[in-house]
Image 1: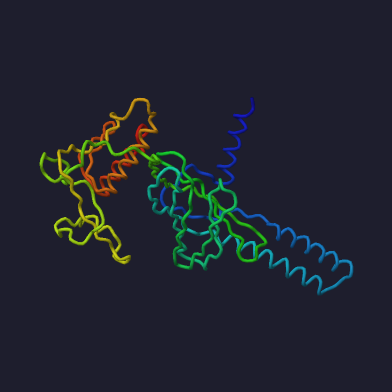
Image 2 (image 1 turned 135 degrees about the horizontal axis):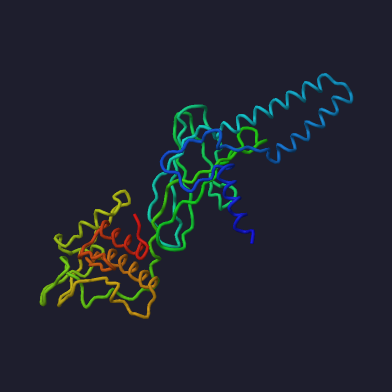
Length: 330
């Protein structure tokens, strides 16, 4: 009965007290209002020690005891100020996010800028939902730092970056200061490829141009170069993708004879007993297999009608259509 009002009051308190926002586009500056600080475990123990020292100095009327107690207290106050200022003034900006397949970890890049002020040491970052931050970085004065946080993925589509918590205990560890940030950052999650997917849906091998004729040699894929292969059959497009620093790899085009049909990956042609996610998973596996074998393929999914092609742009367009099928938004 009181669950809804309680949630409403908690949300209102979080937004007002902890400055929790749904999404913050662009660069965010951590003003002092957004930095919160409380004594940590060592800080509470140190406070107890100060009380014992003060009581001892009062009982025995020790001038040096008073001096030591107040000096230690002043150090604690200075530590509190320095801990809060270790976060205040930082500029936070979202970085890049590479698409991943469902089941993999999405990696969110976060940029920390320190335009003015001293060096910022031991700044911990992590997603609020994961508890204590686990990634630590230093931000030099007038410089930048790049942090990468990983988040598990379970389903296809857009994955918004969870709320991020920044934490520091620098310099003495008596206090812990933290701040929250919800970057306007999201990762595109492709469907998980079907394991052990059936062979590509083709009556023959696709030709080099996507079509073939009876009686001609037809392109069926690529394989490693073997001595004696004609130089004109070298697959230069695939060779260029290999890293020369690793020694590169020569591959040649493999041809088969006979009549062929264009390789088309069509969602509507999949068996009706398969559910939608299973179909998308199979198409994802087929797209990756066709790219691996360098077989030009057409793609049909809803209003997406892509002609036979090959390459990174075609692969990315097909996988994006699969990821956002049924829930597309800009």
